[in-house]
Image 1: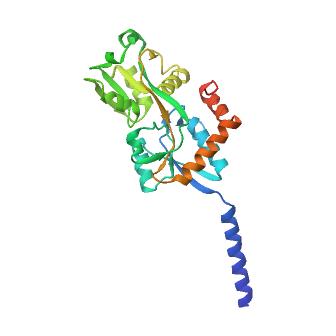
Image 2: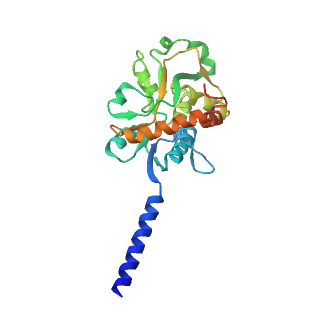
Image 3: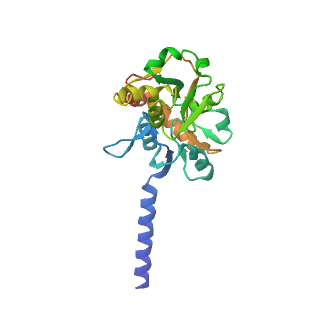
Amino acid sequence: MKNKLFAAACAAMLATASFAAGAADALRVGTHPTFAPFEFMETTSRQYVGFDMDLIREIGKRAGLEVEIVNMGFDGLIPALMTGTIDIAVSGITITDERKKRVDFCEPYYEAGQSLMVRTEDLDKFKTAKDLEGKRIAVQIGTTGADLAKDIKGAQIKSFNSSAEAFMDLKMSGSDAVILDRPVIGYFIVKNARAAKGLSQQNAVKFNSEYFGFAVKKGNKELAQKIDSALEAMRKDGTYDKIYAKWFGAPAK
C-alpha cells in the first residue's frame, strides 16, 4: 500500500513539474493607461489597448512570456521596477539620462516629440516657445512635457493625472496651452472630434525629438535582451509596421 501511495505521489509530482515546465513565465507589465493611442482602457471591452499594449503582447508571445498588465500611476512605474513589483514598464516612457540612472531601457521603439495644443482662436498667439512665457500651461504628471514646462520662464504649470484632463482644462479656459507628446495630441483631435472642438495642434512650435523605450530593473540584461530580440524580429517580418499602421494610420518610417 505504501509503495502504491509513493508511486502515486511521484506521478503527481511529475505531472505538476511537467505542467510548470510547459507554462510560460509571467511578465508583469506596469502601465498607466491614460495615454492614447499608446495605452488606454477601451470603454466597451474594458480591456487595456493601444500601440504599446499590442507591441508588448506580441513581444511576450515571441519570448515565451505570459503578459500580465498592472495598472498604476505613471510616477509609480520606476519605483515599482526598482522594488521588483513589476518586471517591465510599458507606458510611453521617454528615454532620458535622468531615468537611466535608476532603470535600464530596452532599444527605442518609437521616435516621438513634444507638441502644443491651444484653443483654435489662439493659434496666432503661439508661434514660438517664447510665446509660452508667463502663460498657464497644462501638463500630464511625470511626462517629458511636464519637464519642458518647468524650464519656460514665468510659466504657471497645472498638472493633471491624464492627458484628457489637461485637454479639458484648456477647453474650459483654465489654461492657455497643453504640452504633450505629438501623437497623443493628434490622436485625441482625430478620435474625439466633439471633445476636441475648438482646440488645435500648433505645429509651428518646435521641441526636440525624443525616443520611447520599455524600462526594466537596473541590471536585468536577460529580460532586456529578450525584449530587444523579439522587437527586432517584429521589425524584420513586418509585424511592427502592421501594429504601427493600426494606431497611427501610416507605415512606420
